Length: 501
Image 1 (spheres, one colour):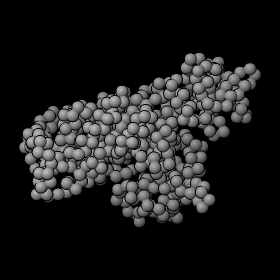
Image 2: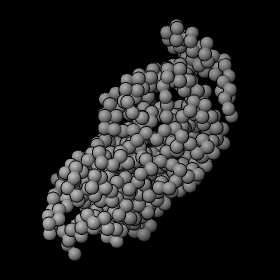
Image 3: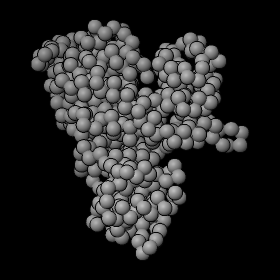
Image 4: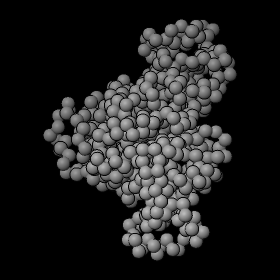
């Protein structure tokens, strides 16, 4: 049967309001109606498109090829940015929204623009909401994507799956006013403010005499205020108490003082004037040293004093939260500090955020316990790794070429990511059968090698400028989308089960 005949059959059924569940080329869950127009996501010739009938306002707004057969008309519309905006205008559920502090959320950074359907299937029916569009500027640069691309992919996935429970879009680890304005202008519903460039890491490593000397240079009125409010005081809150010594206060004022000013400025300049709900997350995890609970208290209390409404806070926990592998460190110490961090979050009314949270299976039950199931967890690279696992299963030749290239170029990626992998321990590719290739995704050193080289692999070109891997990689995943979805459902589902979701 030809593509044109399939399209005509689907269009006729769509026009008649007939069930489409038996049509293999139609995503039946996507069917939606607006002002008499009906639209569905279809896949003809390996390409997803929108199929529209009706002739009304939405039909007119969608850009695409109109086909007339037997007196009936329909449009096949590519998944373009303008067509995403047309869907947003017609269907509110396809737009991101603020989720708020009372619902658990999971950030599902989709670096390929292909993972969201599997993510939606994974979270559907669970007491958690997905932040489907979650990318940092670094990730955009490494993958040659834009925030428009990220929002388009997530929104089309929401439409495809008919997901109406609510989802978010996170401008992740944004540092500059220009990037913040960019994300908010496009409609991002969450902003993760990375204050690392305003955190004085040098002060964190000074001895007490050095801290005292630097602290004496701060404004006298500021010193008088913070000393009156914090020095040698114990703050009792439910389930915890926080002691702030005079010496520790001086260090906190130096390390975090300018960062707090930056947070307040961004909040007042961009979040308040937005005129809509924005989930405003504060990231203080990109620091040289862990955030002890008293430092967390200091930052949180200073923000409350300035009237900043925080959605979630991401401290840097003790131990190592490296990319794509389980927690490294003293679990007992982590649990002890986590309990206080979570109590601080509860006291101030925001959620605890866990960054680089993918695959931290040993700590997930603790996060669930101490946050009472109210948290934000960020994942990203693990979804890419499940795509790589899928390719290893269904296209071993492509995987082998990618693996070899990653091994040869991994040193280039180390300037972007802190990991402690020993790549010499990666089993030689020549000793691994095709059937065993997916197991590389289970070995920490190989896993991290492939995790951090995603940008290198996706942008690699041959001497003629053609893609070395990206085009075939995308084509493989498009052909085997159900296999990729199954990998995501199993892997992210394991996260959610251990998190009590």
